[in-house]
Length: 319
Length: 163
Image: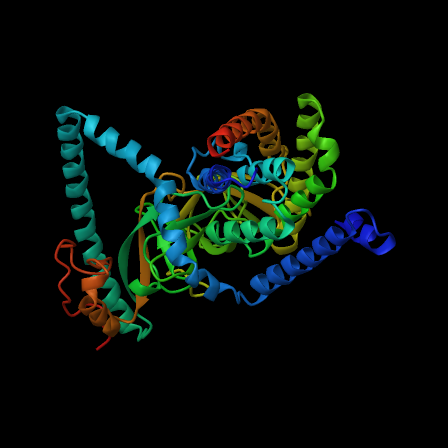
């Protein structure tokens, strides 16, 4: 690039006019990039381009969808029956676990009322499908099929059934871009579940790995420790599964140990994700009322009957 | 002669195919191998039909691709403009290179593009620089002769029908 600039400055080469053009375009590109990076002014352009982009994404996602459809058609009755049975068993187990969780939550609510904790937060979630396209192989980002029209907002936490996946970065009317927790630009406040140590999990930008570079040597962190969200920063509700530490080693600087963790969420194979919305309990009602265009809100903090999300008064509402 | 309808169709078809190929999902292990398809298409047209691939058009195609891939606006535009500029500048020589030499030139161009990309990325977000970043230019280079011959063959066919 620098050479091109020199060219235009020093001598009028045969393609002199073109060199001038190039410099102009480079300047324009830089201006655009800086504007996009700083102020994200270009978001309105993204919105405008949506009508154009929609069909393109659909075509690009078609091959994998067709392959999936074919696989489904080819799978035999026996396989389906087995899968069905397995899912039933799983459901039963989850129901059981959920009812136990319910009891715990009731108790928790009573205790927090005792402690006069007023910041009780309810969680409700909204299902979204991943749009199966690759945006950029060197960035961990995905597209989901819910957007601003569905009440999604920037910074909203996204998870799958196993743990935290990422957060919403940019919004369009019917789509949103999610930055995964493994993206190089992502930092996630976490807590080691066993010891309660709070630290930060950074994305590595490569594969399914998180890096925790700020662990004091005095801290007790071992292989196999699970990480959960700490709730610091306010974007992610506390207590969600993040990952499992698989190695702890000496850091480059010497003041901190570095741990590597594998995310619990299935970052490469998830196709259904949950968009979490943190609501004070009173707001959850409004969610239920808007359910017609959101799909059934799955309530995480409610009764065990997840299938029928009737907006019942929440047991942990502050009275 | 070159401004036939068939060639126009081929031009936009190749661009659309390049953009789609960039978005189609691949297994994670193959992901680093994905070549910059749009660069291959842009280089072909800059070499063979430079009027169709002016600097301005390369820039606009890059912008369109940035929108599609939700990249920083202007990133691909800059990469394509630089690529297009170099090809247009050395077009007279590159056109008459024998294929092996042309392939080497393409490799150099794709490598330069990769370096440019990493430079721009490091301004905004730290990039994990690894040898894997070189795989895409290598694959792109290996694909070049096939892409070139295929497009050339298709373009030859559009001619007699119109004439």
